[in-house]
Length: 151
Image 1: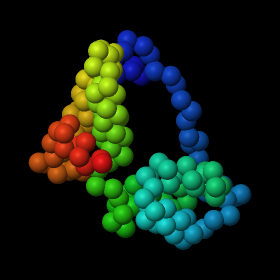
Image 2 (image 1 turned 90 degrees about the horizontal axis):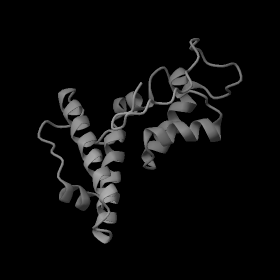
Image 3 (image 1 turned 180 degrees about the horizontal axis):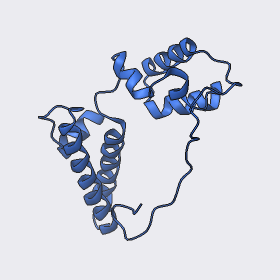
Image 4 (image 1 turned 60 degrees about the vertical axis):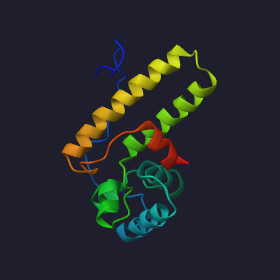
């Protein structure tokens, strides 16, 4: 698959195994994993951070195989999911960082181009999330309001 804003090809990544069952060496049960996920979510961890912590600290290779659904779906079911999807939140953080860089380095046109591409991704992703009703229909990207919300 090609990259979005360049003429380069993407790198092929690893694939998950086709067989989807809990490995025999995983010692945690479904209830324990659900308790860990809720605990980490209440601490303010994002779904990807929760998956990484489960993998590195608790030896759970794939939370989806253990609890039967994705971490985001589980958090949504328990009403612990963040108000904005994680990928949109990360893009908003990136745009804030680029804007703060541009405030000190006004002539950095490469960073300005990066800001334009990031904002295009934000608007495209927001359009998708509005259509799938994961964010409110009246949500609008505004650089000044995003900066205030992040502080």
